[in-house]
Length: 243
Image (cartoon, rainbow, N blue to C red):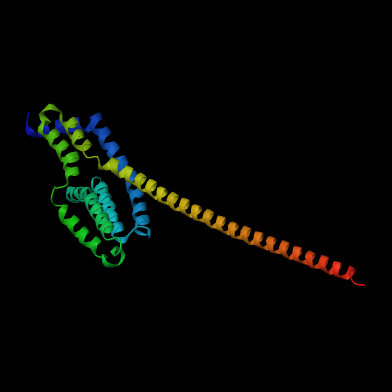
C-alpha cells in the first residue's frame, strides 16, 4: 500500500470516528455559545466603574485572549490560537499581582499607580511567549505530553480526540461568564444589604429623634399645664381670702 493510500485510509477512519467527532462537536458548540457571552461581559466589565481601571484592563485582556483562542480554533490559523491560549493562561497571575499592589498601596493606588495596568499588560504579553505558568504547565502541557508520549497505544482518531480533549479552555470559556455573573450578583447583594442596613439605621435614628422630641414636648406641655393649674389655684385662694 502506498503512502497516499495509507493517508487516505487514516483520514477516512478519522472522519468517521464517533469519539473524535463527538469531541470536536462538543468543543465547537462550547465555542459558539461562549463567544457571544464573553463579548457581552467584555463590554459590561469595561464600563463597570466599581472595578479599578487596572483590574478592568487585565481582565478584559484575559477575555479578549480567550475570545481569540475560541475563534481561532474554528476560523483562523494555529498561530493566534496558540498565542491566545498561552496569553489567557498567563492572565490570572498578573491580575493577582495587580490586586497585591493595590492592597499594599491602598491609600495612594487611585492616584499614583495609574500606569501599573499597562506595565503588567506588557509583561503579560511578553510572558505569553514563554511557557512558564505552572498551572498551564500542569493542566495542559503535562497531559498533552503524556498523550503524545504514549501515542502508539491509541488509534489515530482516539489519539487526536485525546489531544483535543486535553485542552479544557472551551469548558473554561463557558464557566467564566457564570463566574462573572455570580461575582457581580454577589457584589450587588452586598451593596444592597449595606444600603438597607444604613437606611434602617437612619430610619431608627429619625424615629428616635422624633420620639425624643415628642416626649420633650409632652413633658413641657405637662409642666406648663401644672404651672397654670398652680397659678389658678393660688389666684382662687387669694380671691377667697379677700374681705
